[in-house]
Image (cartoon, rainbow, N blue to C red):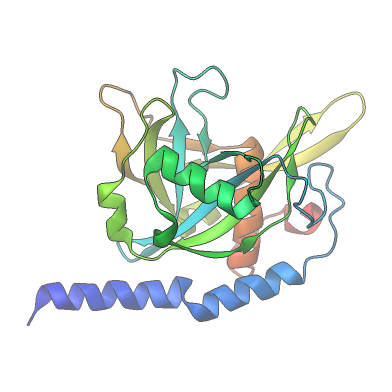
Length: 239
């Protein structure tokens, strides 16, 4: 038996099952059916005025449907050490998708050719309310590209993937309240993840916490990807 060929067939089958054409169509159908949001951190589907965008990369790793995330360098001025998605500010003339792909390439070396873009989700207002961020969902077509990433260690300490099953299992809630507003956000504390890059001599904790803006984006994606398997208490209230 050609064991290597069998492995490749199994990997292709898993990718096709989880992130193939049918999965993409189901995601887009679920996305289109979502009503306008009443959540104070979400705005309409119009991302034309979005100041930033990020890529939410879906990828099958070790035959497990997973999501790729990064951990920001602890040497950055803002949001140091936080778990997030690759992305950044738009440049003049760019679309939100072009921004997400450009920033992803600059941060971790993942090219636009490596990613099949599925679509954009609702934009999210930053806590400071100064601008909003649009999450772009895309599928990394071949997990082997994760073995040859060119990571900018000045910006990114770590690149890792978390199985969707782990994300669904560890989903929790956190509440925010101020004088004028109060709202609930999702939270994830994951211990099952695969590291694809970590900057030399930099410590990586055994638990990765996803919260804030990144958790909002992830929650949206999981709601559209796994409406039956992602039974989160926040699903109804969120939209």
